[in-house]
Image: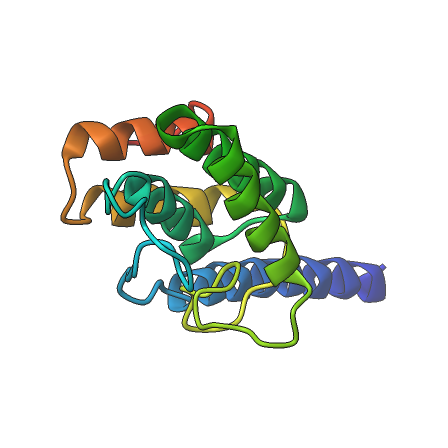
Length: 164
């Protein structure tokens, strides 16, 4: 009986230590400062309207900053396409979307790849609740219009139950 009690106690302590390790690793894996160059390796608009779809690319960059899983990446790329289509038409939207998708398989990578913002490389996996809470707080501190940031949070976290 003593061996069973010791085994149960050891198991509980191991689970507790594991949970603490997960919590600490999430906390230790902070986001680098967000950066954007607009439409990376592409123009931000037409010659007559130079920044026409730049805001679409900035939002796309923001989402790439913290990543998520493959489904999140696909939705993010489709949002970029829809945004560009709304402001510039289907031809530009398709061109930019195709470029982004081809870029995923390119051997040449730029620094703003999917989930580039984490100080410790993060797997292409769903965001945990703790990560989402942290990201939401970090997004709210970005130097952009707060209404736009709240819309970004709503679109990307689907009414996440944050404590904010």
